[in-house]
Figure 1 (tube, rainbow, N blue to C red):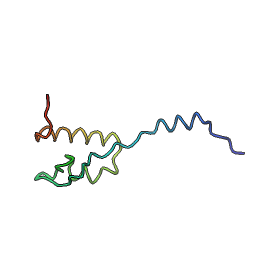
Figure 2: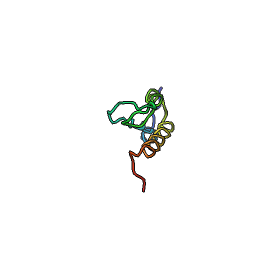
Figure 3: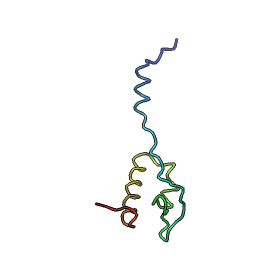
Figure 4: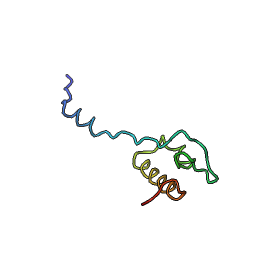
Length: 78
């Protein structure tokens, strides 16, 4: 005889599942001289590996993208 899974367990498990961090792609896909995309500021390696990254690694890449955008003058810092 199979035992039923409590509804509270199912709901708790569903709430604990983290959604994947979305790609920063803005569909402006062109590489600069350093092989960094001018649209999303990811390197070729980061773009290629994105689908296999966990959320922690994706957040690290997003931070690097932000730093690259600031360094290149694409974002103003206050």
